[in-house]
Length: 367
Image (tube, rainbow, N blue to C red; front, side, top):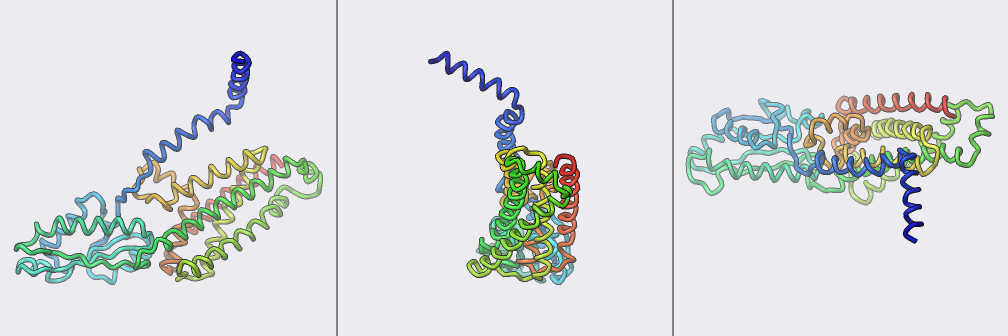
């Protein structure tokens, strides 16, 4: 019995050695996931983009600002003379938080009175905002007694104002990310399987013998999934509004345009996978590997991109869900216009064009 089992094991090892793709996925995938989870991803929030409005202009105000920067959590991205400069910074994403030091701040501390500072926060990412809020409270509590001239129970009290998501509802943070995840995975996998299914059934030879050109075949195959994806996106947003109270503050036309760009890129990527895979099983695995994991881990949906190592941050630039998620939050939660999210839309256009070009070239050669 042992000899027969050993013979089968040797046979299987020989098969694995010949099937280098399977061997590479079995050995390389655990190492890749361990690298991403253990090294690249962290729930710690760092490099928070901070804007400062110092209306007091005193040494005490500067010491409080420096305490935020010295904590290692905040990066100063802008200083402004008044609060009117803050909305554009938050709308474009240049700032995630703002510290406003009022006039008379140092005078109140010198007189032994308690005073307050205002801390503004972008609440569109509720999980990050909650962490940032805790950081700010901790820094103010630790630093304010040192800059106060008299012993006061609470020398400096932070007054927090959360924009876009005042109650920090997690649904308003999760719904855009889930929508990006669902649309990316379904568009890629569905399209990849639709084309490979023809190969497995043997009907691809009949299609090749027909007057259809490769481009026409691909257009006919992907058009229904584009319509289904658009319907799924519309239904999901309607449910999010009705059940979870997620507002749509921006233009529905802009939202439809950005979603369409994202779907086209996903469908083109699915077609490219279908030209590389010879079976539905392989196409399904490739589709999940190249859509689900990057969307979950590298789009900013779960893990803040700013907290990732620089090398991983560069890799996130090729993940289309990163741009769709940023544009989606800007339109849905912030009500921002095209002047804010056009770079994300341009990135989606570039991704879609590259994916379509590669898919078309491969399809002409292989179909």
